Length: 533
Image (cartoon, rainbow, N blue to C red; front, side):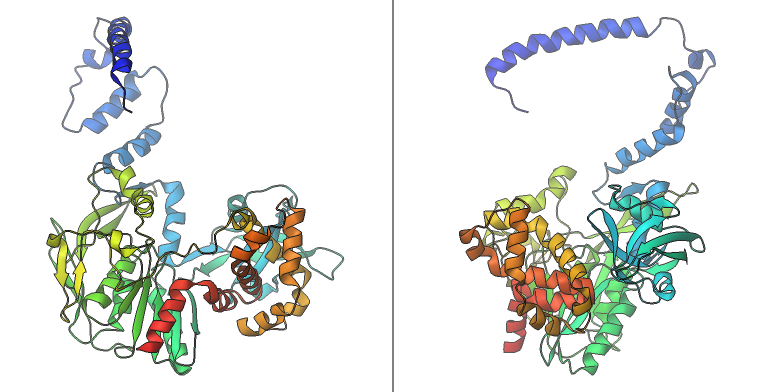
């Protein structure tokens, strides 16, 4: 906070007065006689933290929980290191590891809240709920004899009720359209996979599209399955989408990079103060070493995603399209503790094949580090590439002569600005209603919608319905009046969103992404680019 001279003239005497008062209070509350710790001849050792905790337990005015103090102290210590060295308490570690492990224990459904009721959107193939006959569209009314419908229960609490250790049982009763009575299910929880490959589909007869949302232990296997399916459909060119992928397991990213590179080509290397240089190189046994390749990135692409994008870019293997990535070039090692908690400690930096570290600076404090994305937006970086500047000392050159930069993420070869063309006041107000309407529409028309097995078929059907007008009326009833000017700007975007969400409710991501593609400017740019190669 900054003060002017007049403020300082007022505040300075106040600060001095407070200092005097503080000195008086210290004299009052610190008795002149020796404390019990001093009387016992206690001496601070080199282990200051344990010494302080021992003193607190021995002499503090109130009783304290030592474990709570430790949990509070460790993050403060790690905050002196870097933004990605973190401590995770035992109660949070299992959930934090789920995306990396690629599974969790539960009943195997995806759900949403519809009119304060748990609505089953889909059942996970091979999961316990699907095996017992739970169906999309079922509404969960009771969980273990507790009424959950109409109780304003938060989604995270619902997840806590349905998830649990493998082998345990949860009893639910569901309301199903066409049935008068509630249907009981007794479901034994099991390992449920978390898919990190959102979708793989053909955007045209020769070009495939694969989207990876994070890197987990099972990501490589999921990717290979999608790659092989698309190749069997005639794919000779690939668009790999890493947008909003915050990273994860580095080994998975290395394995996928290996599928694109020739034998001996460097993928990444790591190096730390106590860690020797460790290289990862391609084996020459990849399944897509030739064929046009495009990788999509944005400002949320980070860590393992940047390793993969950097390997493709630095080896001149493909074209990077989108916006500058996040800039995380630090490697964390998980360290478990006996009480179930854990720490992720930065032990090395990783470097792309040309030798660049893409880690952005964090010497201005962690708040500034994480505010960097907002700073980029304010500086216009998301709209024009000319606003981005790197020092010549961060310049590197690929074997093919392309100039690349380190020090702050992966710069794309082809820049695509963030799309704000559809923004209007009407869209901002109506946006929260799009998904709720799609959910209600799906439930009211499920019998007709389930007849369609592909996104294109369903979209043709929805295009013939009075869907958009129905939504505008729904928005009006929910407090957002019709706005002709706003609809002129945002109407097409809203309509495509409605169709995509409805298709997802029936066909999952294979229904969603082929429709969403119509308003995805970065993907449309990539398709046109790869078609022109």
